[in-house]
Length: 310
Image 1 (spheres, rainbow, N blue to C red):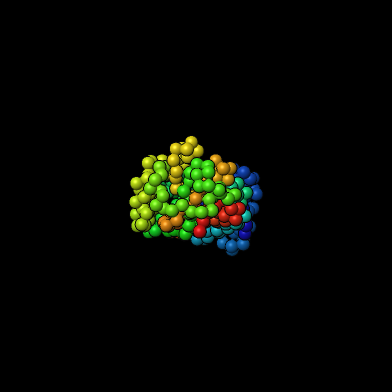
Image 2: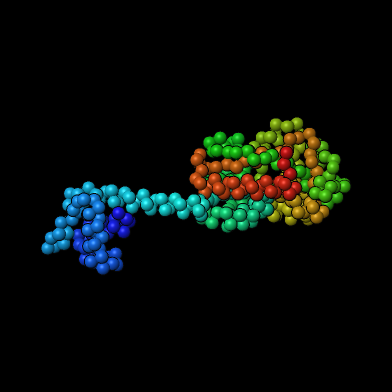
């Protein structure tokens, strides 16, 4: 028996008429009748009784109907599985990235997915860590790269790297710098007390880490503003309006071109633990594939020297 015979059998059962079934299937009635006869011969049983009003399914026909439906369903599922294995995972995935990282690897993520994951629709959101955590919690994101995941014990997290916070200031603020725009000598944490600091919104994790350190007070006393926009923050820094504590990746281009300069801070631990956090415990195939693309893009960024991590 073949799929055509099974479909013909089910369609005749639906319409209780060989003529109507033939019209629905778009084939000639004699041809449909021949398919039914061949199927009955193969099964060794009569599937329909012919009456003046059409046909009615016999007990053998009713017994065979469930098998026919199951065979066709299994065939459709097998075809779909094979198609998925060829074209890769399918679905929609929402990902959040820190602004500083997202602006660099976001385009590469889309290019890679266009080639390798054509069946996956990506929704990408850039934001500060506190915003991304909120979006994870309310279900707007499937996963996000964010900081201090130890505070998100109810979510599944994979540690990715520890980003280093640098003191960012005007060009030549720290003397000579290397090719990346970073001064070879660090700045003592106590000197932060005498600077005007413009910072992105500090999450609870960073505030706790600063408060627990000897010079934490120096930072809090020097914070003039918290600015919820990396673009605005960089504009102010370029205008000589103050200093900031930022990861290298956020001001990489401005440092390399000498528009800004940077220095490490000694006497304090100013690293940001970055993790890939998921909203669900078991990510679907599409989400796992997108996460692999993100890891690949981060590895390439690190190997190119565009990312400063410990």
